Length: 174
Length: 333
Image (cartoon, rainbow over all chains, first blue to last red; front, side, top):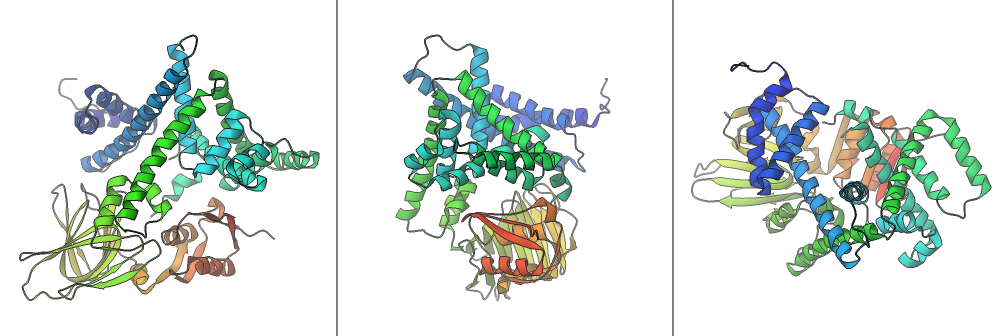
């Protein structure tokens, strides 16, 4: 490849902007390794859904938007991971979970959090009580001091939000 | 403005909504045989329904998996902890607002707004609440109209007249300055210098929209790319890095300063997105009817009335699922 620009547009983008993006992320995150990971993720995302840019500025504007989203995801993930570890300390398991198990739980927790995050407090709590703790609507209504009819509305609202996020994971539209 | 091509690949919203309602009915153990049968009929009525129901089941499986992997319920406590932390952060901000005596920012507004921006809004010299449109007269005779949920800082010194749009949208009608100081409007994306003029600036979703109705404006993006001149009747969108080529601007674009939203063959989803800027809570449109064309003048001070007018003018119905969750959908006979 002696100095020849690669012909694949994404390879070109990578050559031109990867270093810049890694720098940007490093400044934002203060951690070289995470920055390198996230910069990689941003290009993986571009590979999954290629798009064209009419200028270098356009490409950088897009990459920095993706990178901002990745940073937010990363911080949320870390917040969840720390909360999980704290709970684990208070309530230790007899057998330490395997790294695979940990990864599965963490992944699922992040997805569930993404689904419930935008919901009002009571709606999210009603949904968790029903889906995670198996409570009936009558019990949830008592705990939240609302009518059973309201609980039913909460459930529909929460499921709609979850299904929309699920569709997003699935179809990859955004 | 909105990328309709992208939205078409979205799963059918109405079916998802119905699937979620069915889930809420079936999920409780008080469900009757008749209800189960009705659900079966719904499911068999359309492939779109089955697809939507598939998503509902996948969500159910995700939660089921978490229950299996973690029977001791640590994950619920983890999620509670995280939610609690976020909530107390919000509460802290709220208390701060009360202390500062700053009201007017709704819950929904700042749930969506990043923290530093909220702080900057509170400190701004002029600001409006959601649904409010206000006119201000500045010391040099320049007039400002602040649109809903907007904030502007005013900074005049001996060399320049500097306005900073912190959030939202502002219409500027400049007055002649006896000291000939230039008037510039700044956003996060760059500066706009007025060349004897009347223009609207809106900052939203990571870019700035400019529309000039009189005179001209010179746009200088933050990154230092060459400035672009935008003449009367034109508008552009720019970021810190680039300016789009100027295009004819919508002449009805500043009608909001008179409290009106004018639509001349405007797609329904765009119109509703505009209306939703003037109220709290969710206001959405069924994708099915997003492309319906709308004509008319709608009052911004009373968005409920505007929605009622839409109901009279179009084959749509406004459904209030919850007080803060309103959807415009197809009216079925």
